[in-house]
Length: 176
Image 1: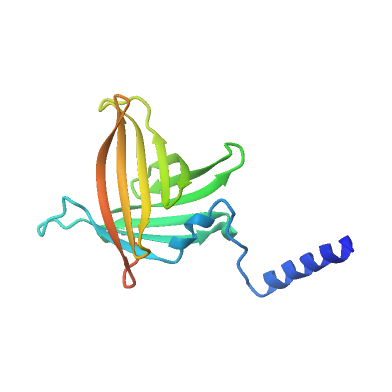
Image 2: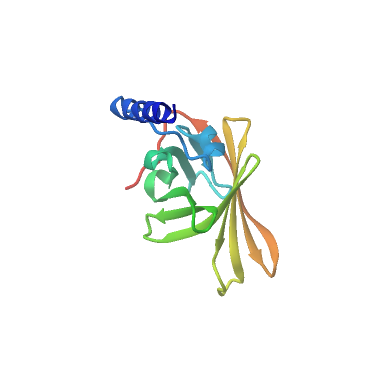
């Protein structure tokens, strides 16, 4: 009986592979599935008519469901980056790797708490006194996102940017 079940699963798997079906999303990433296939656009608080500052952010399933990819661009490619979010067995945690158009890489530990996706980057000791950067993304009623940034300075979390993004259908992140 066990062999019949095993063979059935193998046949089912082969059938899915032949028909191009996607593998399921990693169990660690399932809470992020609400964002997949969606694109959001938000305006920076310091945006002006003379110098508009708009961020476009999209979410995609990646690496056969083992990762979620966020792609963003500011002002149609002036700056941007791609983030891969995956479970790291060694660390026993979600991790994110953020690659920017400026050529930098940021590695953060990530956690999902209820409706919040949180990344915490250890930036070490630097001249401005910031030791960690925390980015919090949460859904606001499905068609909006809020993205907050906080900085750990003198053992106190200090508020940074706070943006609201609206879901859009006619935009995609782009790079120059």
